Length: 171
Image (cartoon, rainbow, N blue to C red; front, side, top):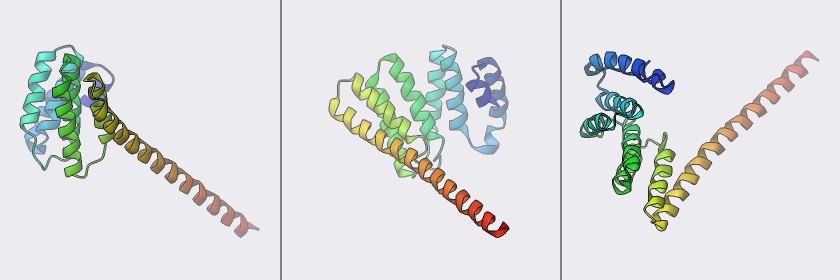
């Protein structure tokens, strides 16, 4: 619920629900995810220092068995640094997130880390790394797009074959 209200930009309601989730956090072991979400909400509310504290807490809790929540942390905290104009620290976080996603074979949203890393490199005038991360970003985006198109084409072929078969059976 908290994430839904965050997406809807009802930050006060999001904080209310995330505090409820935080009470149950020890049962589900999602400290990093909860702290990242609180950081994101506070950041969106303009409470930058408070957001940083939650990102720091989440970063301190990163372990290798937190395969899925880390990417959001690295992306969010990196964006925080980007808005501070600290592109070097932002890039370090994006790169750490990319390394984490590779180590844990978690490619979900990795393309966003590539895109953010390319953006940081652009702002740092590092054209070599900009090209490198841009090519990785394009490769991931193309793969995602190709997978979806391939699946849609396969679904259409299946539907056509099924409809053709059903028509033949009726005749």
